[in-house]
Image 1 (tube, rainbow, N blue to C red):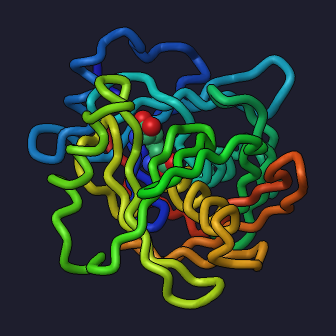
Image 2: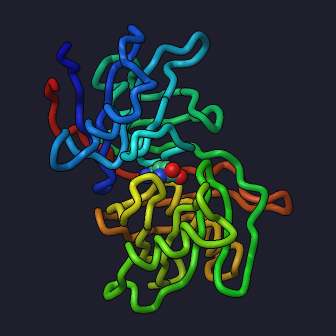
Length: 257
Ligand SMILES: N[C@@H](CCC[C@H](N)C(=O)O)C(=O)O
């Protein structure tokens, strides 16, 4: 049976989107999901996302990495799913949806999606890096030679090394540009390579930079391989709240496979 799909991208983090409101998609077929995400034999994407009905909210998000496994929250995927929901007339300009890490509020205006992320209470600071969970786990470390750097090799070594091991972490390399602008390159778990952008990753970087005192701003610009994102937040003694990930989300093409 042919499957209709839609391709979206958010600052170059790209996703196969499937309207699964009728529950026709076989979620257990990991190999098939990996095939759909394969850039040579399939459609090609960093992940696959199902839009499903929700009894109370606008919709439900189910996210799979390119390796075919369901994973934790995808910020850019969530933004793209809001654009997909608008294109399907599931929402108009506002959404409340459930993802694996809980409820998310979002707005969409002229292709720019603002997505509220979960509060972050724990930011672990080490000599060489910071670790925090923004819906997905993120290792954040400085790298001054960020443009000329083997992200795949260096990222994989950290992702598979202690303390993360097989469960892994996403790995973000950061260079400070100004007080409120940071350059970020991310190695993504489940893609097992650099992606052009990572939404939960830049959220982690913005918060880590604030927690380290590298910025006193609460709206940060993040330059990624695929464009620019912004992260805004409120910080107090309990941690980080009212966190918003902001950037473009774009329809690329539709097809059947
Ligand atoms: N690209 C995503 C992150 C997706 C999840 C990640 N690969 C993981 O498994 O932890 C984003 O935009 O946040």
